[in-house]
Amino acid sequence: MALKKCDECNTLMSDKAPNCLNCGYPIAGRSHASSHPLSGKTQAKPKLLEYATLASVLILIALVITQ
Image 1 (cartoon, rainbow, N blue to C red):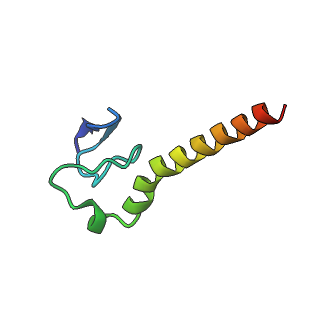
Image 2 (image 1 turned 90 degrees about the horizontal axis):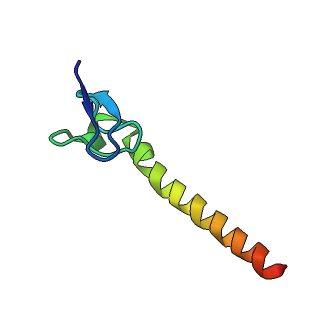
Image 3 (image 1 turned 60 degrees about the vertical axis):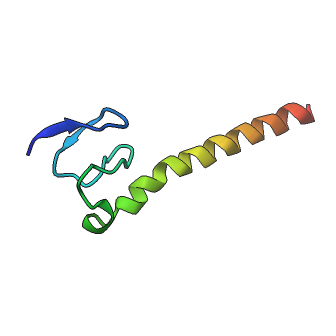
């Protein structure tokens, strides 16, 4: 097993990994959807973070407006 950097987030990972465990970025030349059962969940993580950030901003705006 060799280590390489993810092209998206520069995290060190195994060259055998189908996708980056940190950001979910697929590794070129590997079929990540069929080779790893959790690949869909790791790719959903950035969307969840975006929604949580959006919700936080909306709550802060609502708090500022009501005061």
